[in-house]
Image (tube, rainbow, N blue to C red):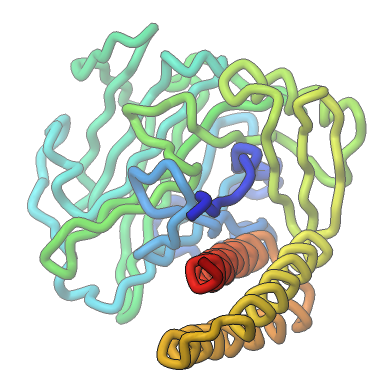
Amino acid sequence: MPSVGRAAEPTIVSVYECRKCEAPPKIDGRLDDATWKELPAMEDFFQYWKATPQPPPLRTAARLCYDNAGLYMGVTLFEERVGKIKATIKNRDNPLTWTDDCIEVMIDPHNKAESYMKFVTNPLEARYEEKMTNGNLDSSWNVEGWKVAVSKASDAWFIEFFAPWGDLGVTPQDGDVWSFDLVRYGYSTGSFRGVSWSLGGSGAAPKSFGYLYFGRVMPLDQQKLNKLEQAIIPTKGQLFRVLLPRLVFTHTATGEWEKRPMADWVRDACDSASTSATDAAEAVVAVTDAKEKNRLESELDKRKSRLSHLLADAKGPALGDAGGFWLREDVLKLKKELDELRWEALVMGLVAAQ
């Protein structure tokens, strides 16, 4: 049977519009400042340590902004078992802080992919930082200006984070692009679960970091696209895709940008899956073995039912970046199953004809 798979997809690149704030939020762990409400949410996370897109096992949302003093971040860590989150590390500079429920913030102002600063904190506001320089890790690196504050609710816990530019060693200008990743670890179920904002991103894979665009990235013009190219191409190559609110920007292997509405991008996948369903049905009809035909028809009906629900979702309200991406992933996985079913039916027909 021929191998049935998807054509090579462009690398998914996460980009966040990090806006300048007029009134900096107070770092008290409450996330009730008006500033947070005005910022876009960073919420399209991926399952940690996966090179291909897998849905996140933990729902997480972050918002970032900056001013002349430093970088601010507020994180909502949704959690059904707040009373069971792991919080044991209290002391400063403990390299085992990651073994608690925690976040890791990784920042590379120079987009070198071999150098970055990492900040780790947990529900007890323990702080640990380390620095990677040209691939060499320095766990003794310390800066004292950064702050964290934590609070809890019945269905989530919250972190506010601030890093002054002095800690980071450089101050961004409007339009600058920095490599960035946010990773979350959770243990409330008794086993490890993790998510990363960038696909495949981790301290061991800085080439997979996403990017902060300082200032307003939308509307995108050629100057902003050039800035993104300069930051992304050295580590991701020419073929990559940036998901922005309701828009998909694909950078082709020939160096061109293609812009598409998110809804059209998703519906193209739906059309392709519908064609696969039709082709599979035609192949199943031709199967002569009654028992195998009944089995294949049952499998086909299940997949057609799933496709019907996905098509309905695609015709719903305007799709956001995270929702549209995962809907398309589900459609493409279903298309692959339909193609495999078709090939199975075709092979049965060939065998029966011999």
